[in-house]
Length: 499
Image (spheres, rainbow, N blue to C red):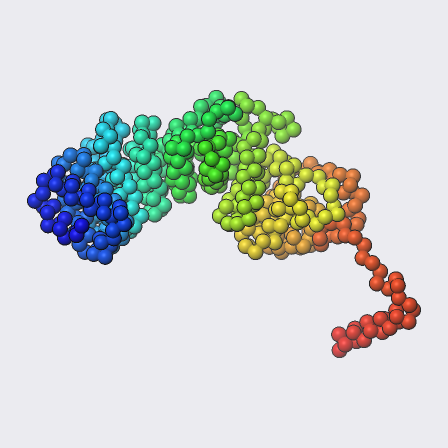
């Protein structure tokens, strides 16, 4: 359908006729027609005309069709000028039932009153449209700040427990876009509108967290069904928003957040891929929290722990180790996929003795096999040592730092597990080529070596980190004349070298 035809009829058409016209347009676009993409001026006028229709008192059915049209048009950056205005954003905010600054103070959030199915679809379409507009238009991003769109989204978070799935999902997705694209809003979200607390409550509800003690959730029953897909999807969006906020806002109930993230690490979703994605978001957010909060991951008195690690529970740390090894085994995208969990485990080991002791027992157990180079093999130690010579500098440094901390930043201990050649990059960067220790202070307990290592230690090549087979004597089968001839050749070579 020609856009000019729609424009010529919208002003005089009835509400029912407007709905039919726009529905036909939406269907044609849905079939792949791209007529409006080649006519940005006309489609910008269509945006303006549809906004004017929404300014009238029309029924939810017509509202839904109009907002669906705007959502389709908002994919094209060239036609967003009418929508990326104060009036346009307030209209969409009203359709989404959001409090957008003072103009919306008398409005209700979509959860305060039960919505009909048609009204709910209007809200969802409006939220989707706002996502497109905010993502595609810097002007709309500024207007969203001016009309306090994020404040309206936070008001919606207060009734998250009543959300229908798509309303909640796109509310969180829009809040993610605003917090990602406008860093100046993050502090206000956390400080004035309590977004960190509200999002933590969204996570608690989505993951069905049940508290049994301060910062300790009930252990998931192995027979419990996986987290439903819709709940998991909303939880992932909430984690992404929290990640943005904690980049700039350093106050809040971070220990509570760490406890929720511990519970997330212990849960399963409907697929292994989604579980790994959830753990990835948890790792990213844990990296933003103060390292002092990480004790919440291991301090769960009700569940109990392991006596040899001071009564601490290492289940969550083991989940992180399993996640790390999966990311190593993928063999790609190490910088984004692997370095966050390596950094998290490094800082956890540096500041929490029990965490370091547990991880070292899993990653760097007492050496027994010393005849194979440390980078050869399938153990987690072998995999990490291979990463110490990776082509990506960040990956190489992060892996080396992790092993160095596990060795209590002792050069001698590190070389024992990696060999001098693999560790050279770290030692140069740290100024420790001559040996010594890093700056962090660790406990004085010493690691005991196995009998196999003690007996082989004098024969280990410090460069390669393993016992090498003795090289055959090249002169063993030579006659005296051949030895004399080779000696003269060596003298001549040395003479040329000195000259």
